[in-house]
Length: 106
Image (cartoon, rainbow, N blue to C red; front, side, top):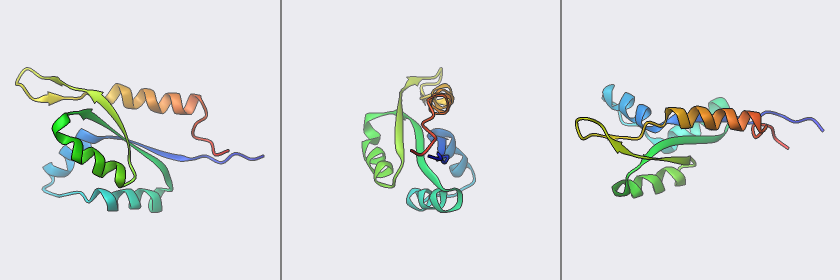
């Protein structure tokens, strides 16, 4: 049986949000998810994001839009801003999925 590759997206949620805001834009996450599926055939779109209880409605919204959330415990930087620092987790998830052949359709 031939196995075909799945397409996954591994998104740093904080970087995406900050980058869009710095441009003065607002991102429609539902349409963004559809675009990822239609343009790039993304089967799974992971968003790596810091877990902050006051943002639970955002997390529910993102899941309903079709994203798979991977949470990271947050800390505070030297100026008291919340930091999730998901970069290493994102890379590790991508490597594990590749190594375990999770990116192949059965």
